Image (cartoon, rainbow, N blue to C red):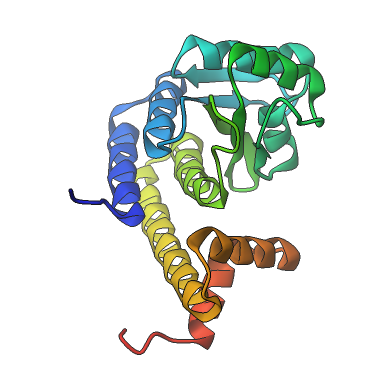
Length: 239
């Protein structure tokens, strides 16, 4: 059985996004297709959604893969709080490992848990210093998402935000191509740096990824930038 590398998977997803940019003109259609892409990209996801939000926090457009996601999203807006709204408002990813014991949004988490949602990962959609909304995936088991899924969804969200934010620009396809190329290069750097840390520390992928994530948050820099710096300090003699 052939195993597809994460970088190849992302390249395939990004190719789909480029086609969407060239063929889809309405954001309402694009967000529905982006939700499908998010669910397909994250194997542990049972459902996914994309919400566009204006400066006042009002949802202007949304796409969901199924009714469970639609209901969970709608409940966030009714309550005025939840991981999706927080990802948009704070501009940083939000992760719930288990809705049964998460106390950040207790009312929403209780509703989500009762409907069968146990894990949540939501990332902001940002374009040119504007927060357009959020992309999220849900799972029916606890602890479904790790730093690896957060990185994958973040790369997809960056490409999606470029698509949505520049859809009306004449140079949108070229700009998206550059963004996607940069995203793939960043992903490759993170994969190589993770492998290097695994070898140096004799540890597993999750622990190595956690080291990168901690350094990123401590230094206030993107994880890809931290990975590139590690590779510059310890160049691969095979490259």
